Image (cartoon, rainbow, N blue to C red; front, top):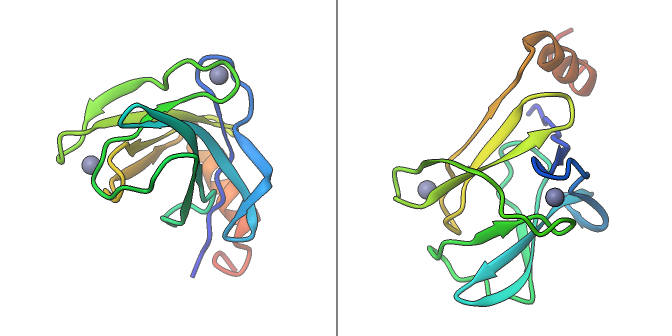
Length: 135
Ligand SMILES: [Zn+2]
Ligand SMILES: [Zn+2]
């Protein structure tokens, strides 16, 4: 199976959201400030594209609740570009190689998508990370 790793940064302050202190799927996680029913904590996501491994700290992992996502560095809420089929907001983060990743903020909803600004960048990234896939 091919594994695409995505490294993301905040669309507002452009600081990296990667956290090497918390590992998910054996890689540094994506750290997000999460608010669930008025409580604040952290949400750590896998940087493997298509992996739904995640970890909540300080907030309960309640299935089907909508997570209020913001930047752990500048505390600005992440931008919302659309609404998911499940009626929760879909939030967007910047990809370090150019482009963006969107994911649904409902805990348990698997909607996500990735868009690259430059398809050559995407191809080079995939090729670098999955040499056997393209051999
Ligand atoms: Zn920020
Ligand atoms: Zn959804």
